Length: 127
Image 1 (cartoon, rainbow, N blue to C red):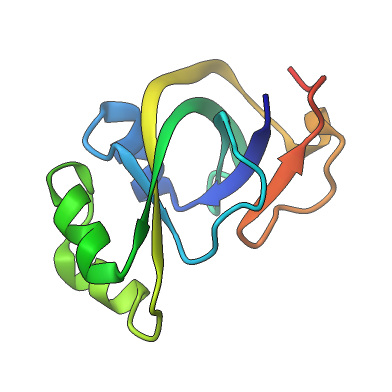
Image 2 (cartoon, rainbow, N blue to C red):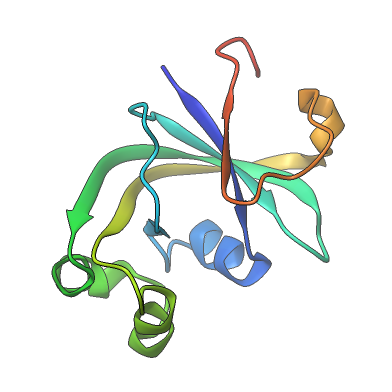
């Protein structure tokens, strides 16, 4: 089992937690196969707020990925197009069960000093 900590904008975090957004889009694919994403909500929240199971990965051209994910994207097509404007490949992690933590955690609770720019692999023994 491999977990990653991902920095995600609070608006997108809310959409993940509500079930409106069932894909997490990335420009770079994790080298390891990941089973879950530990969600770090960026500024102004700056807390680890939950975890999402990863059930699949969709990869391909941005056009292909949008076609497969548009129903559960939780973002507008214009935002998606802007995000992938100069990219030939797009990656979408398909989210399964999402767990919201009762008490938001600090990065230091995971032994992390700074939020990752994109993602950070977590030790298997973490939570």
